[in-house]
Amino acid sequence: MSFCSEHFPDDPAVANDSSLFRRIPPKHHVFDKNTNRWRPSSAAFEDDSDGDPMSVYLSSVLAAENRSPSTVLTNHDGYSLASITAGFAREKGQTVHPDPLPEETAHAAVCGEKGNNNKSAPRKQFALNAAWFILNEPPHAAT
Image (cartoon, rainbow, N blue to C red; front, side):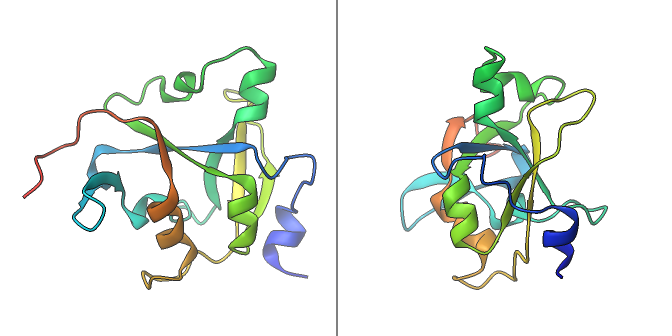
């Protein structure tokens, strides 16, 4: 049994088309010259520095609580909010596991190997395919 399936098993109750929101700090905004747009860096989709799986926020829980996704940015000034779908995360070998916290009921974990920075690595694919929900002003102008 893998770490993810044991500790953060995939929950099929989270629909594939559900948005998973990820907070993006200003240092993880990059200008992609290939697409001529700002996007999150692949580093924005790494597992947490303490070894826990990548944190996200479930759109379904936010909607059920009549909350705007922007509420997950409270106390995170300057951060932006990007999303991928649960189905896309699963396609990249990840589990999607609700993991509510006392201070945030919409919290969830995306567990699985995120890979290095090659083009097929899950974290790189998340960065290339994430949709901005809230894009705060990028930290610097494109060069």
